[in-house]
Length: 321
Image (tube, rainbow, N blue to C red; front, side, top):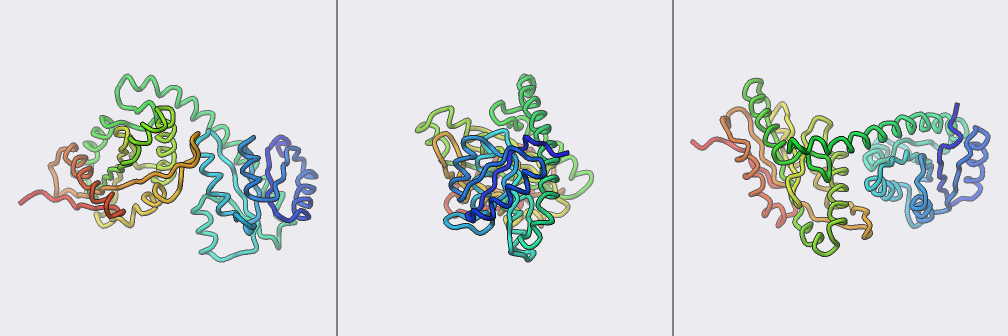
């Protein structure tokens, strides 16, 4: 059975299309349906009250469905909410759809089959939203319990990520693992050189808000088993294990670099852009033995070049002869 209170926002510049969609959804048992005739109007409605499901036309004037998706995801980053986004489209092709999925779209409905697929897709979104809300409630409880772990000095209390001590422990574990089982290690120091000045300008509340936003975005961009940490007020660390050192290339982490530098963060001070530089150190068993602190220091030493060039700066670590 559908959840009558599922919040649905329909965004379409064609009034006739919105009316038809509203009738179909109302007939299916949904009661909380709002309408916007543009992406800008939709964002205003979401600011007032988030939606569980956003159903939007891909092609709209001023701001299309993909741009709307990007801004909604930015709003989601700053709240304990997830908006399930479905685009209505007459476009097809694997490249087009892959690009849209990469920008955060959850599902599509072809306009030619909308009469048949609209209600089943909303039912599916309804079920997933229920699961997502449960997971978010559990995550909030987990976040509240993290404070107790701070006593062990392993967790950063602002972002909930591991801290520098935790990173050193995991680096030590990973070095032992590649020494015994092979493979390679990639370690990235992510520097945010403008954060200290932004903290001074906007204050501590903004600074913590932005740190949490950066942490959430990084978590969305890395693999589930990667180790993501916050090191200090302007640096994050990322540790990942791969089968071959060739996988530790700048191109492997381009999405991470672009995700920080090309998309602004929604904050209480408005949309804020940041500058990020990444130093990348890679090594395999031939570089051992090695102190974890050396890896951290070498990655951080690459940051000035990263800031200057606007690129990820790599270093393949080898033991001196």
